[in-house]
Amino acid sequence: MDYDVLVLGGGPGGYTAAIRANQYGLKTAIIERDKLGGTCLNRGCIPTKSILASTDILAKIKKSEDFGITVENIKVNIEKIIDRKQEIVDSLVGGLDKIFKLRKIVVFNNFGKITGNNEITLDNGEKLTAKSIILATGSEPLILPFFNIDHQNVITSDDALDMKEIPEKLLVIGGGVVGCEFAGIYNDLGSDVTIVEMLKNLVPTEDAQVSRTLQTSFKKKGVTLKLKTKVEKIEIIEDGKIKIFLSDGSEEVYTKVLAAGGRSINTLGNGIDELDLKLTDKNFIDINDKMQTSIDNIYAIGDITGKWMLAHVAATQGLVAVANIAGKVKEIDYDSIPSAIFTNPEIASIGAREQELKENSIVYKTGRFSFAANGKAKGLGETDGFVKVLTDESGEKLLGAHIVGPHASDLLQELVLIKSNGLSMHKLIDTVHPHPTLCEAVLEAAESVFKMGIHSV
Image 1 (cartoon, rainbow, N blue to C red):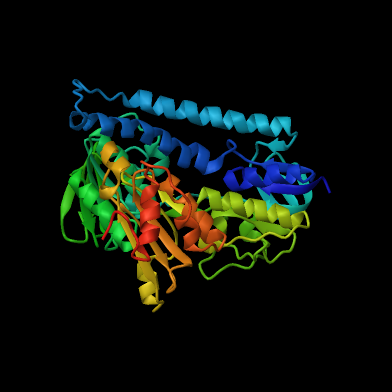
Image 2: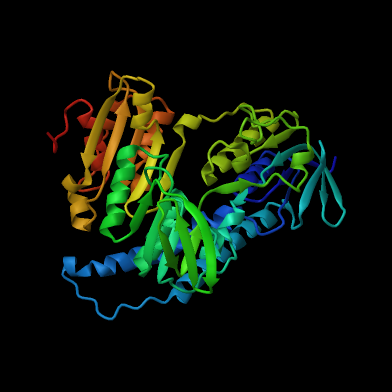
């Protein structure tokens, strides 16, 4: 065998797995046809957050009068925003390249096709063999033919990251994570934004109260919401004019349409579909707790497993796969996986949603605290949202937690620590929180489970 471990795909799952395998002393190589970092670093998490940093500043400037500061003649240089985004991405990709070189991990910048249980063939014909193979091929934006995606008028999220113009009138198809993040970005940049979502709520996988808070915030900012509505037909009249036919019978013309209606997994054309792998009922690759597929020496991680389409889940699965390859025992508690949505207000969550507990007739307690009653949030001028915790009947076991508001993704982590380690809620309550801080809202929410909140009744 040429290698102990071959990793097919260089996204956050693949490159994390390759580095950890190298740390365990396993001879490792990674095959990536594009740049290391995959969707997350090159076309997802990092570039969108880089652009969001610019639009967050813009949003604050627009509210500067509230803080006693007058700013005149605000100008947005969208080209500079996009160029800055690319500089950040290139810097991080370069950092990954350097790590792989210093660790002497072989990187094959080729298209790879798995051609046997122990073999991957590169597009130049070279065959690589390994004792274990990790499939980490990820996903890409879902292309639906009737959307007429031409990457100029009707675009995907990939296209939106390089769009050096601000559309006058933007339609976002899909009110999930990707759609809402881009809707927020372009609303702040000055576009007239409409979101079409066929379900009754935006970000429908989140707690219902969180979804409603985001909807209220979007409406206040002038974003038009068309919920429980489908796009029936898209007709490109000419550049900059796209006619949309909706299920409510309305017809409207937009200057740009963003199709943000999901992702398709990369299992076709790379040999994965030719392997005799067991699939789930939704056609994802079936894996066990060790990330093993139905072929013992082949492991699968990331989006192709259908667990959570999140970069940190792929990375964690990569660590679990390699640990088990190296003879160690490691598993994932999927119920303790945190998630974040970088809208404004920000959203972060872990564990059960309240509607799920109700649907399953589970007895629970709720603790909630509004940022409107938090001194730091008031000082920041960011009082929309709340912290909400859901516990078992005793109040001690955390079942779920949901935050919508300023720095939600940062504030969630102490609740992740509580849940993933099975700690009592009193471990959080008895921990001193500094004042004045946003994290006091987490403490107050936990205290309110026991009706002991200081700043709530």
